[in-house]
Amino acid sequence: MGIGFGYYILIGAIALVSWLVSNQLKKKFAKYSKVHLRNNMSGKEIAEKMLADNGIRDVKVISVAGQLSDHYNPKDKTVNLSEPVYEQRNAAAAAVAAHECGHAVQHAQAYSWLQLRTKLVPAVNISSKMSQWLIIGGLVLGAAAGMGMGYWVAVVGLVMMAMATVFSFITLPVEYDASNRALAWLENKNMLSQEEHAAAKDALKWAARTYVVAAIGALASLLYWALQIFGNRN
Picture 1 (cartoon, helix red, strand yellow):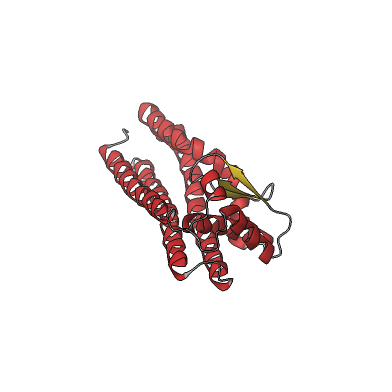
Picture 2: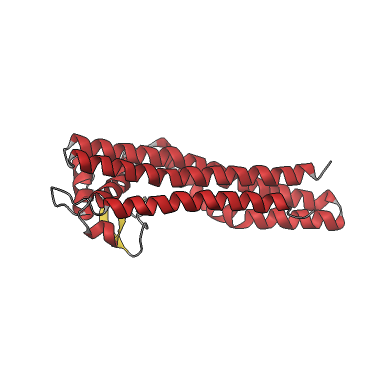
């Protein structure tokens, strides 16, 4: 059975929405990078203060290459900030730095969704790379030699894809919670002016939407391939 024209429409639609959200995110960050902080603190300083205020002493804040490459690594307990975020003193940098520290706070407090996501990372790293190849290979094998073995190969691929899809949805509460922690801390500690806080909130809102689009895209792709596999048995 061929991949089908519907698959290309689906992938095209998801890619378009993803591009629109990503493009809007970049515009927002460019805009809020011009909102200079009244406290004149860099992203690094914001991050270090949030960690200290939450009693976290064993997490380092380091600079990494790239743009929008910011992340928290629970394995070595590092808040990794891209060079612009690490060095700059604006609302966008403050938002990202505080958000990544939100993950560090989650880790320190054993936030259940973060723990679950962390446990799934090794398996998802493998399944996300192999799933689609197994599905397509299974469908091709099934078309050539009857459904038997090809069907089960495709089902294994679908299960692996389902695991990656579940992972993308587990990511949502983790990301939203980290943003909520960041914004609450920024407000409670009076780190930002009203204008700066509004900018940080909007920036994080658009960042979160990239994860929503990714999750919806993963689910749509999973459902499409499920229809291809199980529909092909009829």
